[in-house]
Length: 485
Ligand code: FAD
Image 1 (cartoon, rainbow, N blue to C red):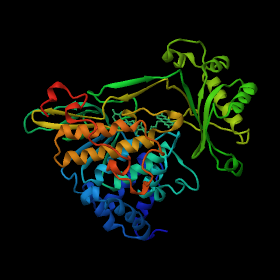
Image 2 (spheres, helix red, strand yellow):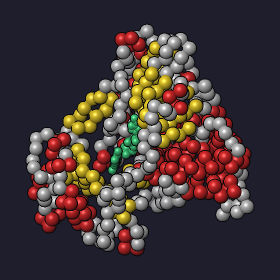
Image 3 (cartoon, rainbow, N blue to C red):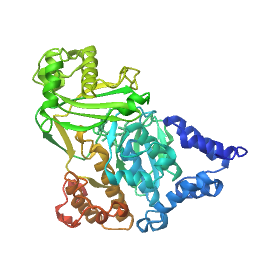
Image 4 (cartoon, rainbow, N blue to C red):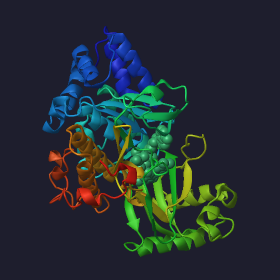
């Protein structure tokens, strides 16, 4: 398989297969040391390519070369000289970092955690599957979307993207939390970050672009959130160990049984178990993953929620939830919906070592009013862009998060390309907001059908997009002090 005599090949093979975030980073450092490679960016990528030219590595390079050869990247020079900071190594932060690296930017990515632990499974649209294949996903994860599978666990997706990002020279730092911005002190200064730990050498890093991909709970200062309040919606996610036995393989997945489509199923579930659901999804991946929307009355009746309360935060607070009853509720729903055909369901564990069952409220979903901002201080400009859940929170049961998250990551990369080309700031922002208007309505049906042609150029993805729908004079959210842009 690899050349047994060559230690670098063996390390590279370990890197390809590594299944934990820290293991990936460790293998990568070891690999660079073994090869005597330093530096970052596409230069590092070319160094790796030259040093690892046996067949398995070459198959990956040919994929990445094809990608990197796209005209949008101007052979990796479109953003040469642009310094980016990306916050968050979730799927969207990593995906944005990859595009910025391909554009030739210097990319530093920060992640506050040190592990990828989310078993939950994301639904992938056809373009996302195609995109990940083109990044060599199968080289890192052989089971990636085999047959008709169109989903992946969040952690596997992060692992694939982390490996690609590292190979393309993105500098990744875990255990570092972004806390805010430090404006440039003088004329010759640049924008820097307040970080935790404050001793991190990265506090010295000066950047001109900040991409925030810190998830739904993290939005940088300056961006306003809009809330959409729907009817009360309580979601439950749960994961069970998948032993990949024959019996397990045979059980059919449920890719979304909404109540309106299958009233009989939900009626039977209610009659037999007292569990009352709006919908349920079951995906078989690394784990058996279920996500369901439960009705409050049935959670009260089954003793999962102890007391009814008007305010949703108190309703679902740990003191008001009987954890054992929640586990039974989730397991019973999983067993019933798979016709009791999954043998002996045993909970997978979450990052705290506890049964992986979570109950959450998605009555309110938030989105940012705008997708980007420019700040200026002492003559230094900083472009800030949001991607992923921190731009628009997804509706979990539909799993739209990652598809729209990737679209926004491409749009953000396009914006940085325009910025690096010297386009006037308000024009860059106006174009970004014109594109953002479309994001929440996107679906596999109303985006371009020719997914093989997708690139960071919005015209390849959104049919009939008007990049000037919003004029520079109408850009929302800019501070008064920034009006001279
Ligand atoms: P995330 O995946 O949330 O990643 C954000 C990253 O930023 C995290 O790694 C976080 O640690 C890091 N971060 C946050 N703040 C900082 C900071 N200040 N400094 C440095 N790093 C920071 N979607 C579904 O469709 N189905 C599901 O079942 C589902 N389950 C989920 C379970 C959990 C616990 C979470 C958090 C999200 C879940 N989602 C689910 C949403 C889905 O994961 C996202 O839509 C998808 O991962 C894309 O998100 P993202 O990259 O924008 O953000």
